[in-house]
Length: 217
Image (cartoon, rainbow, N blue to C red; front, top):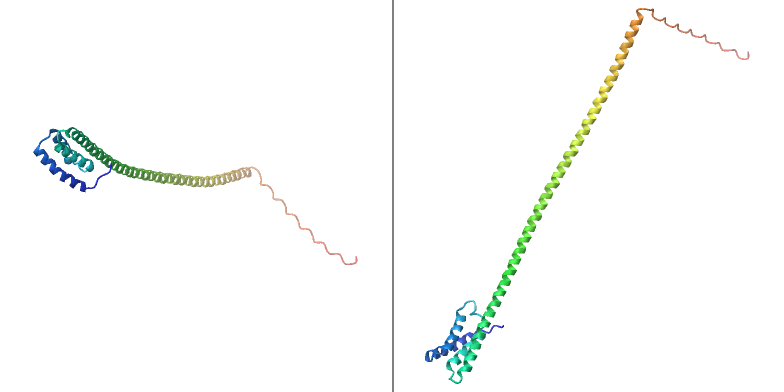
């Protein structure tokens, strides 16, 4: 329902003056009741800014009811009742519509705020997951480096042990050779005390050089 221009309010106030005068001149219980219902709308902060045109028509109908003659009163009463009920319904409807629009705006703002908070929570969760992933990656890198260092140290230790083992084996071989040599020498010494040592073989005499034959022989 469309809103009417504000100058209609001034016209309504001007029409209310003869309405009050008519009430003072000849009180009408129905007209007085209708006037009080319109006044309730005027004093209600939730409805007094709505249905200005319908309220103006209702005031005019109530004024006509106050001024109506006996024969005109039934029709004037019916018109006044319809106008007042229409003004109340219009004011209530526009007020409800305005409240619905306000609630819709508030709902939209709440949704935007909720979306913003959800986005903030999502960003915070993403950041937490990123930090956890970074920590896990760093921990995995640290463990991998520790494993590599351990493997390298083990290889170095194994190489050192192999070198030491080879050296010990060489020492053992040399010791066994010396032991065998000493055993052989001891055996020779023991054998030399009971029999003469073997005679040395005579050296072979050198052959005489042959003289060259004369040429033509």
